[in-house]
Picture 1 (cartoon, rainbow, N blue to C red):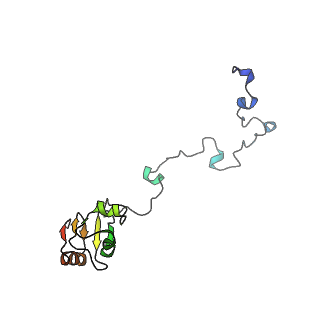
Picture 2: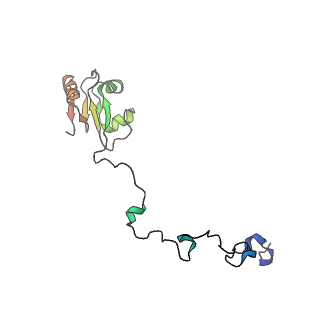
Picture 3: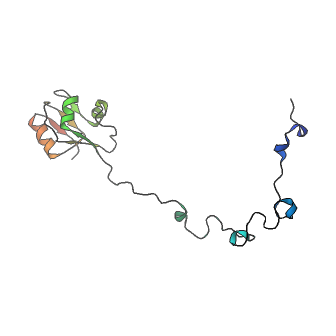
Length: 146
């Protein structure tokens, strides 16, 4: 089938309704503008960005991103469950074990619970004072951020 102008549906050629061409047209007198007011006058609309800074046209974004992203936290009692004697604890091994999800901001080991795993090697993790005491008491070595 070839496409010709006479074969097009009539809806595709519908003309725009002309305003202000008498009451018989259906849009005479006020021409869908209503009565009085700035929007009824000719040229009576404000430009979208009139008279304000760009920042004032944008919505407010509530809250602010923290300058210090939250560290992923792991307690010693959780390390007991996932690591064996002489194991290495690092952000990557903690993620593999499923103890933390996001390691971008870093990982901190806290001292809740008592450590039962011996000779742990801690790498690239921040450590609380109470956790540090327990790890060193069980013969662990810490090579980490301060």
